[in-house]
Length: 493
Image (cartoon, rainbow, N blue to C red; front, side):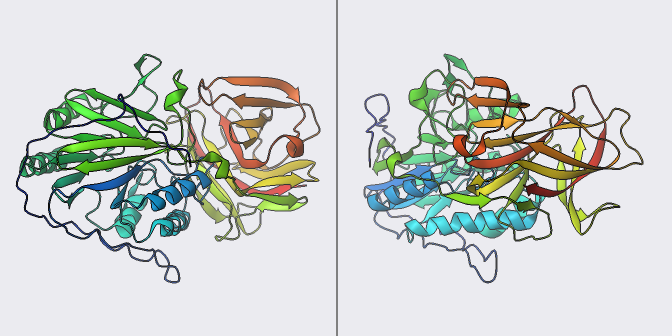
């Protein structure tokens, strides 16, 4: 295990007002109920109450979700958990985006949470306290599931350890906002604990953006992005009162002090690294190791040994049905790219059999709606000559301009895209031969986000890449209509 000790610019020794030394009770997390009756979700006990101001250490990770729309947790995250377990912290904090989320069925969301809690068994019985992220809570269904697995009062809550308080905030129920009752509660908690040694804030979306390429970056929604008045009110409550903020959302490490607030961004827990930054030293997998000794605070960045990380690959021989939407228990998990589209398995349209996947799009909300098929484990395709699937466009109410789509077959940051294919009303049987030199190959640099492209190439699956995703993308430039198409029978031949 390679450990990077944060030196002068990464280690903060902060002094706060000395407070009373009597012990304080530790808030106990609610026991998550079972997601499935046959597979209860594990729950760890809270750390024991001990005399105030006794030194303790805890670990912080963030954004451990999968990158390729998989249900299983990334191998990097499992290695991070192994290292945390060896170090033996008092407890662990997650800063959000613990699962991929954005699923089209409740069953798939629950499978993701089962997979996540299975991974946490590696650190049991160490308690883990969670911050809600945008991939964890993004609609009413995901919010209801969060309340079930974490406890109904664990969107914003307080944990007291020794003479330090940890205040967990919810920036997802009201997207990108901490306002109203929650802001009043935060102000009251900071006032209640103003004489304590440490007052930590845990939130998924950073209070302020990191500097990237020498400027403030607009890459992701953060609390100061759209809701300026609410953000200014939050900064006023936190400024000079919080010891430090632990956030995620950006898949990198960063720390800065602005507006009277010290903020650590720790988003290297397992998901994809790289946000288009010319400072690649900030972009790496990691977790934070934090030591508290009364008013003293030390933060260390720990990097996992990536030589121990190997993602499993599954060998698949053609012909094979990749997905026909008949089995809810399939290991293949469909995801939708954004909130402007919805989808679910449904009875097949006329001329089809069994079930198909109904894909509801609205071009006014998003011009490039996409459907992702996450293959897990990642697959090596052997003997495959083509991929095919069926698409149904309703004859009644069909758009005046024909719809067009393209297929992308990809690995991590590399993939092949087909030419656009125009759809006609009724059933369309689409076949994409690998041997035809009609594909566009593209590879993305994780740091610059720039792509290297080669056009009119053959799709060389076996020698080039194991396949992690199959994506269907609609081209909707200057279109405003909404509608539904159905997908069925994804095959490899």
